[in-house]
Image 1: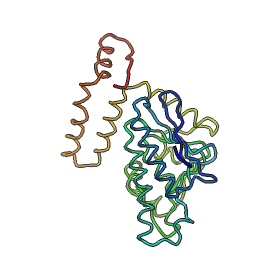
Image 2 (image 1 turned 180 degrees about the vertical axis):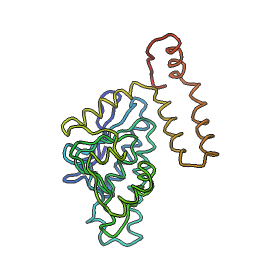
Image 3 (image 1 turned 45 degrees about the vertical axis):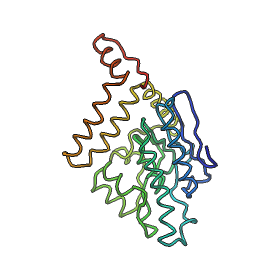
Amino acid sequence: MGEFVRVERDGAVATIRLDRPPANAFARQVSLELSEAAGAVGADEAIRAVVIWGGERIFAAGADIKEMVDAGPEDIAGHVGALEQACRDVAAIPKPVIATINGFALGGGLEVALACDLRFASEDAQLGLPEIKLGIIPGSGGTQRLPRLIGLAKARELVLTGRSVNAAEAFEIGLVDRVVAAAKVQATAVEEARRYAEGPTLAYAAAKRALDASDRPLSEGLPAERDAFVPLFATHDQKEGMRAFLEKREPTFEGR
């Protein structure tokens, strides 16, 4: 796919692999390649679940500071905009997306993980938004997605202190969904993704759209939910799921 981001396929599961040693820092090119990868797996109907992985030692340690240190406001706008767009593109993938976090997920790396539907972390993982220690703030969705996930009070504390949390605390506050031994976290995520890949793909996409509207006023969120719900009755999987229920058998979803 690109120099630093590639897509690896295993049946209906795709792994978007971040690979820019030593720390998977998000230079602008990495962000652009991540956007391209997210668009590709999102458009491929044969892919029905996605895992994002940075490798066995680190997920991503944030933005490339060397690329940013001498930047002015006009220069940085394009850089941070590329990562923000990459996070938007990851969030827009119309199928379940799991971030597999080995080691550090910091700054922009955590912002990418926050754009995923689920986060699985290794027991030795460290997660945080340390930008305040550099005299800046998160700029690619961290101040927006983190409060929606863990609540404003805890998000405020993490952003203002810039401290990292370990996997146990991340699980306790709802920042990660599962903590797994480091050697098994990627395999666990892929196994979970395979389960999603056997599910009703279009219903997953509809659920994601409806959930995205949950931060709007109820007067807007309810119509968004209905608009996502109604078209599902034109899908094969809706008919199969309901018939299987009435026939007391397990459904066989085809993602259509």
